[in-house]
Image (cartoon, rainbow, N blue to C red):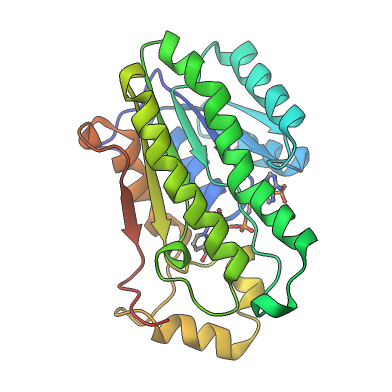
Length: 253
Ligand SMILES: NC(=O)c1ccc[n+]([C@@H]2O[C@H](COP(=O)([O-])OP(=O)(O)OC[C@H]3O[C@@H](n4cnc5c(N)ncnc54)[C@H](OP(=O)(O)O)[C@@H]3O)[C@@H](O)[C@H]2O)c1
């Protein structure tokens, strides 16, 4: 991680308070970036900021619901007011609140999942892109999921909302390449977090997740950091519109 130097860069991480987003916020700060940590709960973001500051870094906590555009406007304004720029956007916040066959799912849930998992990332990136363009470029990473690439039964809205974001990433990359903005997807497999562990209270689900990988295990959040740091650094300077998979060899539906 320390081989990537993000000194002078400002990174904004949605869902930065817990799980992968927390690991990413800490990892980006350890690499030298100033970090805007955003999620719905301000106190949880402030706790991550305190960890970053205790380690000598600089960070800002902002409460913002990814499904509410007015809160995303406030988030952008707060980030620019504090740091004057955003170089790296990590669209990490995502939800997977319900499991069930397509015949059992409601239109209300459809809208909720697409608002948080797809609309919010598009809105935030699209409103930040002009700023990034004016400052000479930027980097966007959209966190999707291996479920978007190999959609399993009972995860219809989750898989579809992430697959839609994957497609949007390609459009972002195409439209913003002239602004020197690179946009890529990061597609993790299963790793331990509140999101995964609540589903994995069902022993069958947990065993299925383990059995589905070539490595026969579930990852820790820190194991997804290397792929992230690759995507936000010059190591991936010739990479845009792509999808980097980190899934332990996920093979089975
Ligand atoms: N865990 C896995 O195995 C796995 C696998 C593949 C992909 N992913 C994806 O990786 C990303 C991170 O997942 P995770 O497992 O780290 O999740 P997590 O442990 O549930 O953490 C989710 C984070 O997002 C925030 N959040 C939730 N809803 C939000 C909303 N509406 N607006 C703003 N922030 C919101 C949460 O904070 P607040 O509660 O304070 O809002 C929290 O910081 C998600 O996009 C997920 O789909 C996860």
